[in-house]
Structure formats: structure tokens, C-alpha cells
Image 1 (spheres, rainbow, N blue to C red):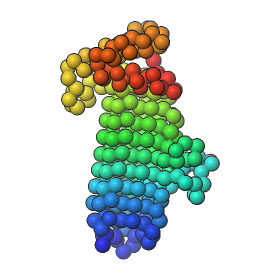
Image 2: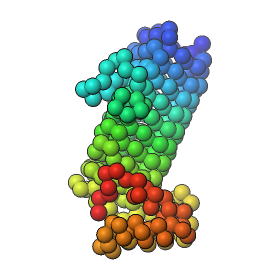
Image 3: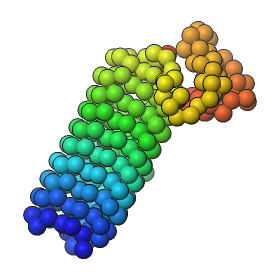
Image 4: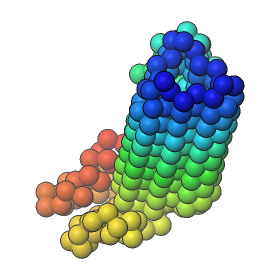
Length: 259
């Protein structure tokens, strides 16, 4: 049997692994599935349909799986939340279901560190190994790629993409896409250099970092028109997988990038 506190309310149609722990006064709805060794703190509300993987820690006062704050959302919509494995989700985090405007899915991958008061809105996709510091707010349809780190109270406009290994300063406002490896900061979310220290920690070689720096200079410091930047990036991408990642991101950007 799962370790469920006597004051918790767990719907009989919820599916909990036998190793799951549920703290006092938490509520787990029908349609919630929770994997092995996940710990649910006190006063947590989990609404289905939602899948939560193994080895997650969910702290007190979180609200996960509720319908979105989109005015079109209805409780009987075929929408859901999927959360992977090994995530830490701290106090007062809200993660809301997708909407029928998109795929109906809000997702969080594996090994993410999500601090207090983070809001992940409908149809967002947070990939793996990210850090979302206290008060980060993601509007609808936002994508956060692997190893991104968002400083406290970063605000991300709807439909924006944050590339892999991006780092934002505290209080940053993101209105456009941020390519991989870039540091962004301030009310305009402008590029302030590369996340070089993060790249070193994650094993990027000196050659990789040098190529990324050359790409950064082309994008942000050359003054070239974007069409020219894309053409030159494509050439550089032939000899650098990291630059190829930046080029692919920019070519597929729907909101454009802040320059």
C-alpha cells in the first residue's frame, strides 16, 4: 500500500505506485497516475488527467493539473498534464492543463528544478534538466529547452521559445525567442553574452565554445541583416554541431529573436 496520510483525500480512480507517499490534507483526483518513489507533500492538489513519473518531490501547496486560466478552457476538455521523472517542484508551483487550441498537453520532462511560486501555463513544454528560479512565470505555449536556467521572476511571453543552455537574469522579460547558449537580461530581454561558464560545466570543448562565440558575434554584433546572418550561420554549421543547433533554432523561430 502507498503511504497516505489519514487526512489526505485520494480518489479511488487515481493510480498510485505502492511506494508513493502522500502528506496531510492533500487531494488527488481521479485520472492522476503517480510513479514509484514520488513524494507528495501536505496540502497539495493534483487534478487529472495527469501522469507523474517516478522519483519526484512535490512540496506543500502546489496545484498541478488544474484547468488553464484560458477563458475557453472547460473541465471536460480532453486535455492533460504529463510530468516526467526526478523533478523537484517546490512550494506554491502551479502547472496547468493544455487547451484544445493546441495539442491539449502541458509537459514537464525529467530532472527539472522548479522553485517556489513558479507558474507553468497551458500548452507549455519544459524539457529536461532546467532550473526555474522563484517566481518564474511562463505564459501559454512556451517551450523551455534542455539545461536552460531562468533567474528569479523571469517572465516569458506566450509562444516564446527558450533555447538549450540559455540563462536569464533575475527579473528578465522575454518577448521573443532566445537562441541556445545565450544569456539574456533586462526589461527587453536583450542578449548579454554567452552562458560560457554553464557550457564549460557541461563538457563543451574549447573548440565548441569558440565556434559558438563566433556565431554570437555574427548574430548580435555584426550589424548584418537577418537573412545574411542565417546564410552565414548555415555555412558555419557545416563544421560545428553547436552552431548548427543555433542555426536550426533561428530558422524555425516563429516570434523572431531579440537583437
